[in-house]
Amino acid sequence: MSAGPTELSGIALSRDPAGDRFLRVRLFDQALGLQSALFRLPSKRGIKSVPPDLFDDLECRLNPARSGSSIPFVAEYRKLRAYRELAHNPAHFLSASEIARFYLINGDHLLDPGPRLQLLRSALDSFSRALLPKVVLLKLYFCFARDEGLPVRESWLASLPSLLAEEASKVLSLPVTESGAEPIKIDFLVDGLKQWMNAETELRVE
Image (tube, rainbow, N blue to C red):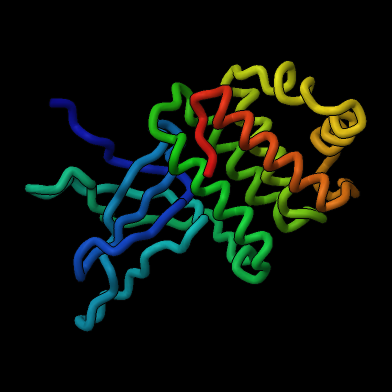
């Protein structure tokens, strides 16, 4: 049986208790895609290590999985970036959480996780500049589907009414700082793209 990874590097997407002493964190790694690791919780004996927060960008050194566990334990980690600003804006945090769920659902079997991690980092960076957080969501869904080789432009975009297709093309081509689209139109486009992915592709969106 091949040995598991000794290092992980990526974005923390979920945190769940794993007994009384550990936290199970699922992160999207640059080489392996979606992975799980166990972080020790602080104890009353003075352990000062603090588990990462959601959306922290991490480099982790792992210990081999202990007997009876298939999830590796983190020996130490370094935080490259913390997206703490997301917690201060509920709308931004909600859209970022939708992106996290999308990666948690679809991130297991990607052939080339590296570009998808770069897309995720770019999306998280964009929230601090976006006029509308759902524009970030729309652009991520579109780029993810496109980069997976799916006909998102030829099928979904081409199926929109002409005025709405023109609006969508404009939003997708402009930086997030310049998108002046109406929120109701962005909501419609995001919902439509999610429906298209669920109906026409193997990607799943909640």
